[in-house]
Length: 489
Image (cartoon, rainbow, N blue to C red; front, side, top):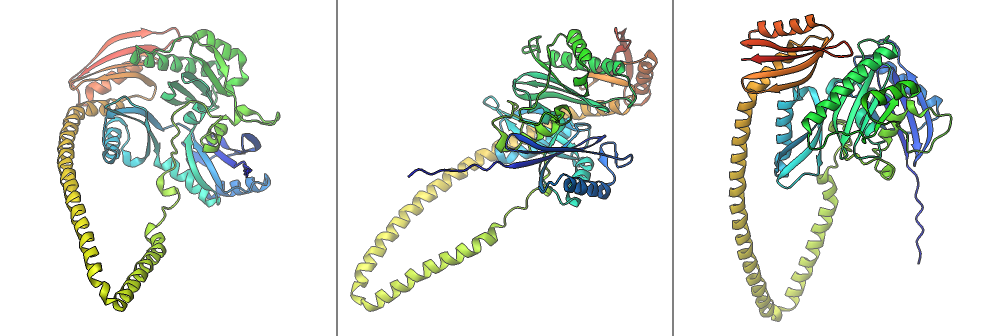
């Protein structure tokens, strides 16, 4: 008999929030059905944090009502600003120890205390003897404000992502460069072998910049990011065959896209949506929403090769775990009854037929012997497991000693790094910091020599370092001043 299965397309609603507003997109299957944008008023969102939760929640309710959208579950996205992403390679670890090791490494690498962040990670393919994870850290303040606003609007977030990772879902190549330009910020994503690394979200100094000024900043930052990656990956640099995808406001500036290609030497292509859509939809405004929708497993066939598919929704906002104690009550009662009934039947049979007692005793002895043999086997297995436990405890002790050694070696470097960042002027941008236990080698860019000298003096007078030396100054073709500082303890 043939069985016909009717597949019902799932409706997916996505919300993306940035400084300018909230963008809503609803698709069913791989076709866009509805889209709308909710501009935010001044003061409703400051520094990426929603400050008027109740007001925005009411606006969202009205928007959904006007658009006749009845969905409750949504996929939500945040800007990548102030979010931190990093691939991390660790020694091969037991599953039970991985969480602690990742948090330790996050505490060492991230400039913000883990308690101020929602930290998520995803296991990635790794060579034998190694553990490879992709770490994402989102400021708690930003995420809490957004998720509480959605709950006030009677919406249930079940997947959360950030813009750079959502855009990476749209790229069809495993290795590519993505540049997204919005009115207040721009994103740079370098994806290699399906892993986005590095990721940068850079705010513009102010909102009134001309396109010429914006492109100067974008090209300079993009050039430094590519050079930084190539310097750290000499065996696999980004050559001219790597495609560069652009999205956002820059798509409507074809002359600037052509200039970007000429100046950096990469073929520039406009990033496209893989979903079917109406001609009236300006896809460039909703690409982040499309990338968020592709995180739904039902759209797995049209998503790109990016291997990072982490759901960044904090656990406290996710579905409540099932109480297995309650679930087990009914089956437990049924099991108990099932055990009692055979016992009653056995007693009745024994009472009615005393003559069979001897035969039953013999059978019981046989069962007892089998149980004793099973007990001996289990005792041997327990002894073997205890020996393995001793080996695991020994490995754990060695691992903890190694971690303590790493903590001691890294403490001095962390201290130097933190003091450097505390004294960094706003108009000075760093491209690299090479740390040792006794010194730092700092490279960066500034718009004037005075800013560099001010930075050096701040380091020299902070009391943490013994000597600060400006080893080189060089002005680039764009007018920026490159510098190298050598700072000693």
